[in-house]
Image (cartoon, rainbow, N blue to C red; front, side, top):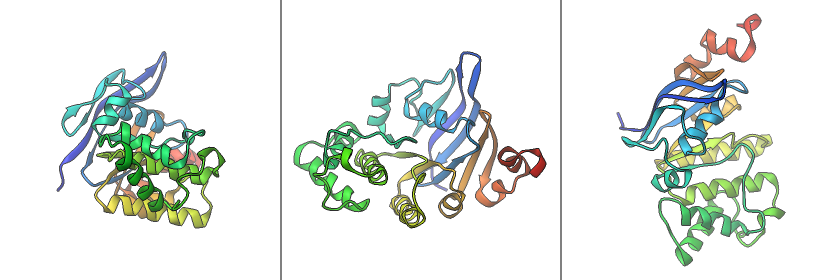
Length: 243
């Protein structure tokens, strides 16, 4: 069994009286593709924010390869090897696709500059389906292509752990197939991924294991099929009448 690369230990995040993440613990192993799922408002994105350093936990600890990262700034956590995409795509619209991806290479774990960063950006743009479009301003691209740029930028940092926050949302059926295949390929290359996703077909086909949150609490964890058939999980998604 592969080693634990990320450990979340009793993580809690309170905003005044609202507890968005309530003493949640789980581990992710090297090379794993873990699904983090749950109904809207369950605390999934807040959990990604805690891991990536966008937010600091109120209590609890998050460790990357045994080293505590909770409490560090987001840019320091990125340097240590955590990259992410966002639920609402975040790109640098006045810059080209290649320049956006180069930003990941410059500020991530690899710290590439100049020609090396440019070469990597074109290589990754081709990989996500944007070959030959490196000079195009990101602001002129479709939403779907901006998401591809954002994924390429995250990969450019050579992350130990890649966080995908609903990266497949908004894709049409043919794009969804391409997106699932791309994530599968990235994982097959050895990249550890945590994906927040509402597309259950993607969770079933991609993830070996999932963690389920509801109202800030972890309510289930385990293999995908057994977890999705758990009555408490069904109740969280559908309500008591359907459980």
